[in-house]
Length: 68
Image (cartoon, rainbow, N blue to C red; front, side):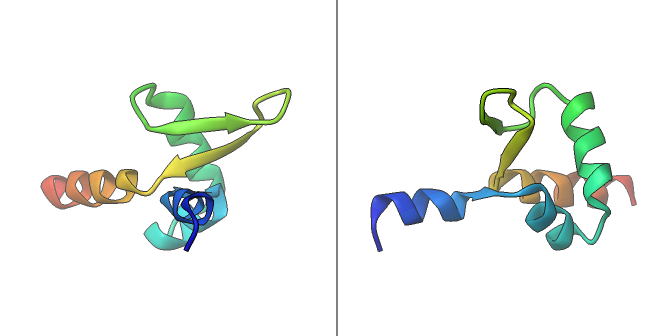
């Protein structure tokens, strides 16, 4: 495994992140807009495409468990 492929596995697309949490990708977009502390990186000249760090999955699961 190269460093680039390992880094790619750390960063998820909106669709991958949404599928892991079983929510709609638009919900993920709203979370990104509402939470400036979320670890995301923007790609492309307009920054429209984003990747979300896999550590955010645990943070969201922890927050959901605390709310229950």
